[in-house]
Image (cartoon, rainbow, N blue to C red; front, side, top):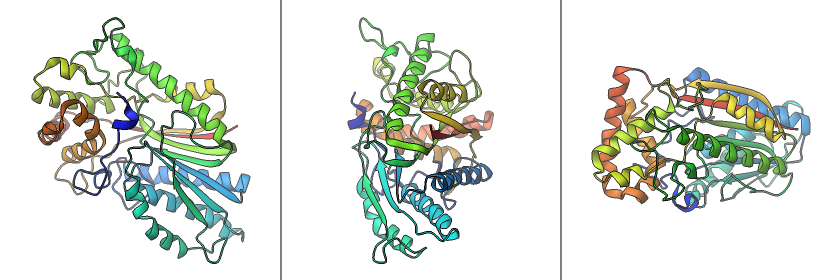
Length: 377
């Protein structure tokens, strides 16, 4: 399966689009309902803006390169860029310096709905022009472009980036780990699961772990050639607190949502082989796994690692289960429709939302988000 051609957030502005269902995703914008509690969200915002401010004071580039990797097409994208630009301009204003020009690179897979972002650019430029003075009196001094492609590999020229931001993207692997299929006949060995579960044989968790190591190492190596010395990366991704050899989140963490999705699929999909052959290209690493890969690759140093639990705020939805179902659908719809067909989607996510609410009545689900700040050596 070619994930670059199939996997994408649901585009457009419709009811099930990512743009209208990304409120559970971490954002710098305080106007959005966040999937971590407000106190933690404020801390994430503070650390992110502080990182770009510190980098700018140290390097003082006349042309500042910012990349948003896995930008998607929701309202978070340009809101994040606006706040990053504003943070740098505030530093320049306090120190009576002209702000730099800003080169902003928006990256996602080629199937991403970049048009929705581009249609909002005129409003962004107008908002930015209301603020602090620009390098040019007749221009906004910010140049935004799309760079489609996988971030597991090179995307940009050498030494062109000063700040890299990625939110809710690096837990997606470049592929479903090949090690979860039998080497001789290609039959999936992860029966009755679509991710690592208590039912999975040891080789499944080992395959997912190896794939994460391979992908994250390549990500770091690629960025090391694109980010200047002293540049920063702020990476936000789903993770887990447990560190056992089976790589299972025993605390009902992010993996539990995949277990609920499997249960929902099992009620609608009669063909067992069809269900067994569906697995997600997802991995929630532990803090130790992230730090180990950074240390082994050697081009960056860890400035900060922090972990946050999710907030169960349903926002404008009838329940938290409905909110989770809408968000998961906007992310997974392309993959599920490709494998099972579109006909099951409405019933699938109705059932999924109900199951999430039922499970929360029994016991809490402790989904974890990890914040990782790296500096280029």
